[in-house]
Amino acid sequence: MSKNIGFISTRFAGSDGVSLESAKWAQVLWHDKHISYWYSGRNDRDPGCSYCVPEAYFGHPENEWINERIWGQTRRNPDVTARIREMADYLKGTLYDFVEHYQIDILIPQNVLAIPMHVPLGIAVTEYMAETEMPAIAHHHDFYWERTRFSVGAVKDYLDMAFPPSLPHLHHVGINQAALEQLALRKGVTSSLMPNVFDFDNPPPEIHDPYTADIRDEIGIGPDDILILQPTRIVPRKGIEHAIKMVGMLGDSRYKLVISHDAGDEGHDYKQRLEEMAQHEGVDLRFFAARIGEIRQVDHEGNKIYTLWDVYKQADLMTYPSTYEGFGNALLEAIYFRVPVVINRYSIYVQDIEPKGFKLLEMDGFITPDLVEDVRRVIEDPDYRKSVVEHNYEVASHYYSYSVLRRVLRYHIAALTGEAPKPNHKNASDR
Image (cartoon, rainbow, N blue to C red; front, side, top):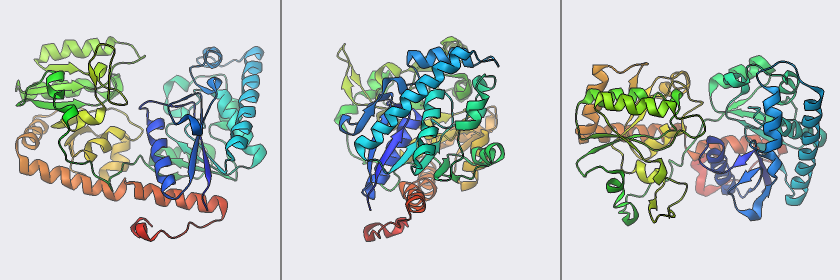
């Protein structure tokens, strides 16, 4: 039987991992006739199925006031406790309203019970589930113990209680094996592995797209130039200096390094350092964040705004030299668009992804001459390039497709409700 699914997060908007993966979950759930509804502080979903509570947003002034007083110190003022309690009670009331309004059958908290960016919301969700025994699947993207900013705080009691809680009607799903092991060790909670996914069952159409016919001109590169894409925000853990070093070692003016995102709210010192390094290495570095958005549109100056997918379709190579990733959405995106990948062997990659058998151009913390020659070959040898990207697509289809997610969600929903899914003969291969 179809269910009404209630997704809960501080934000369902933009291109962050929670927003992207939750949309994929909803798409897969819709395949089995389940209807998704959205509770959050910020929301770009259909207003007809959304329940927006501004106080649930992690950037709400009240939550920011609380965060300023609970992190980086170990003592909590009674006034702070009172404000946390007051907001948690208010948000819990809105959760009751949300569930009643949309007749929700199953909740899917998205990361709000893993990372304490909004402590009152985590408390509210935990207490609501404890009071109602509402079946729920908590999707955890990153935990507080993985972030140094949460290593010192005055809310250990709340972290023990709600991040995440242990409840008999709550199932836990994590995106990498290391997180599952730590969850079991720290909380005594069993969980399922469900990494990020992509719709590999439906490859991107290979058709001429008039909208993007001018995108290389807009980036400022010629038809014979090689577009090397760094599709990440400009933050130190992305290791972009390695991409610059690699392009510099290639020693070919046709190779252009394009960064798709900006530095955001984490400061611009790193971006300035990258610009200085690129100049020193003789690398043509392009920043294209101002022309990339969630949807195609025209800005107030009359310039076209492209999507990141538009840029992927133009890329000859992707660089992904991150020092840490929870999983790596950009890796799946590049494989989906059949772009070869240079990747740093970050810990989650080594444990979860590398054993799957992809053909990626690997670095181990630094660029070597052998890696540079491998890059040159995959760019300049069309037959070799094709064999690499087609192999990667097949591997990803096996491990990271929507059909894998569909099986996992069917299992959890059946276990929580006691109702086995009806056979779907059109998709027998999914089971």
